[in-house]
Amino acid sequence: MQSIFTPTQIANKLNVSTTTLRRYEEQGLIPDVPRTAGSHRSYTLVHFQAFSTIRSLLKGYDIPVVYDVMRRIKNGDITDALWLVNHQLYLTQEEKQRVEEILGMIRNADFSQYRNIKLIQPLTIGKAAEIAGVNTSAIRHWEQEGLISSERDEGNGYRIFTMSELRKILVISSLRKTIYYTENLKDLLNDLETQHFTTIDRSFQLALEKLNDKLIAQLKGIVELMKYIGFFKED
Image (cartoon, rainbow, N blue to C red):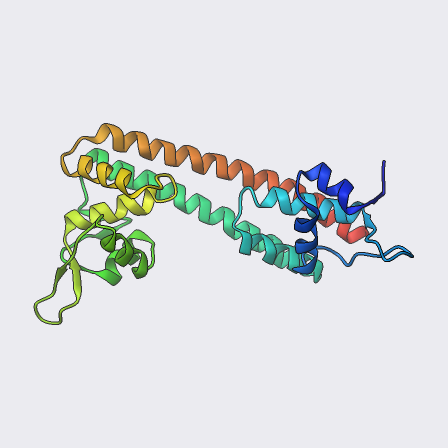
């Protein structure tokens, strides 16, 4: 098996540009690269596997996570890197459970309780964000986009949300990574208000399918990661 690679050879094998490979190297994601007498990069099998691991991980994890994992491994913090990846799997599981729970609430038309929290209106923006698992800035953005609306507390002027608006917030928070266009979300929320649940149910099923695909991509990334860790220990 080939043991020394040029940047072009690896770029062709992974279907990326040599510029991308250099960026990964400059970001400190791979082991130090030896140079030839002519000062050309000379990648070895461990570098090839490092690049393969990055490309695979990026299919299931966000860029900052992938970069953090690769830097930790380069610095010898392999166990910390594995725990970081494990936490991402936990977050995917959490997201799946949340989407399933909210879908169940919609199907049963029961929004009186969520995750053992009794829902009492009106809700502050902080409480609504906590329940939906998002930042308050996301809720403000959705309001600016016309997806939800708030009222104002007569005593302090702060935003407050009714149960109807919380229901919308929960739906948006569950589908924001599946439905990208504001107008499509508006149509879906209108269906929610008029209790036309067929489209909503289908959208939630699509969200769950995407989470399944994400899990598979994450696990495939872990396969490449473990290969890389094996190379790294031997290098």
